[in-house]
Structure formats: structure tokens, C-alpha cells
Length: 142
Image (cartoon, rainbow, N blue to C red):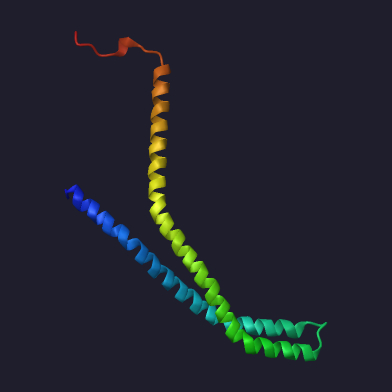
């Protein structure tokens, strides 16, 4: 078996690599999400234009101006808003992942210890309440 110092140094090196891995995960997730959001921009713009043109209470002048505005600003505003929202979301996800990687092992260990100690105490209490029958015990006189 490996000496304890080797195991501890390996664990410390792995713990140092967690923030870098979380940053890579966040940037990768952001890139994929933003790419998929950009693929949706034409669909969103066409759906908005279609919805405006189906409104019965709006006249043709307002529909035309709304269409020009959506087609002119949509390709600029939608990617900008998408990148801001996705950036905030992926930073939050990476912080939560780092917090979970740091705190969950401690919580699981403490919970397991607590459960084990409580179960052992209940077992001892149940065993103490059972009648003590000395006749079934082994003896050295046989």
C-alpha cells in the first residue's frame, strides 16, 4: 500500500484541479448553450413576425413597422441578451458545482457518522432491554 503522505498529496493535487475543471466546464457549457441559442434566433424572429401579422386589432402600418423593428433589432438584441443570461447562468452553475464538490463529501461523511452512531446507540438500548438469560452462555467448566 502507498504511504499516507502520498495519498494525502494526491488528494490535495486533485482538490487544486477542481476550480480549473469547473471553469472549463462553465466555458464549454456556455459555448454550447450560446451556439444553440444562436440557432434559435431566426425561429424566434420569424415566430414573432408571424404572431404580429396574425393580430386582427393591429393595422397594416403598425404591423409593417413592428416587422421592420423585429427584423432590424432582433438579430442584435437576441444574441446580446442570450449571452448575458447564459453567462450569468453558467457562472452560477459553476459556483454551485464547486460548492457541491467541496461541501457534499463533508455532509455525506457527517450524515453517515451520525446515522451509524445513532443506529449503534439504538441497538445497544434494544439489547440492554432484552432479558439476560445466563443459561445459554458458554462456560469454561465443560
